[in-house]
Length: 189
Image (cartoon, rainbow, N blue to C red; front, side, top):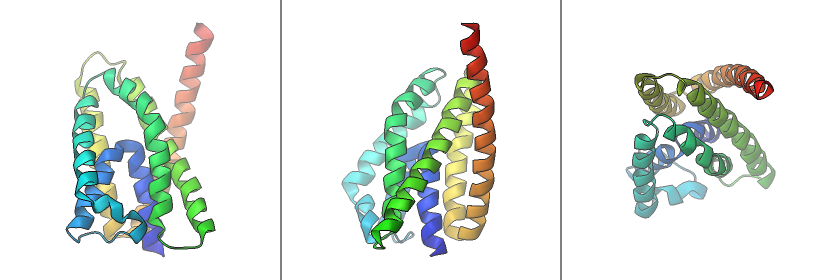
């Protein structure tokens, strides 16, 4: 059960950062037998899903390196990442009591939203820097977090869940600080 919870939370968390990369990696790893997905997520290993997710992951990889455009991309992705993260979290539970599936979807959507808004807000702040390297560094850092997080989720679900709890606390702190900055900006206008 711990591994199932870690899979559900991990897919939701990583979707808030890089949805298409998550779907691509989960599909490829499952296709080659390195990741056991529940039957409810077996569609991820379909070559069509892997191909589309791979193309979108490449598009996101490029879009996320362009200052200001990355924030536009994140704005648009708000309407895709959060529901997709909730669905991945719900379906990761497999064939369980529907109340567990709904609860996982609600918690997963919340985790995805928190991760996404912390990422998008941080990127808005980074975009105020006049040089592009901080943007690239943040983007590669996010990709590294997704890869490392998914590896930790598979290697040690308990360690991953502890790291996730720590990440969510930090993300909550970042969101509170960003909200204060946005509030001050609106008061000036």
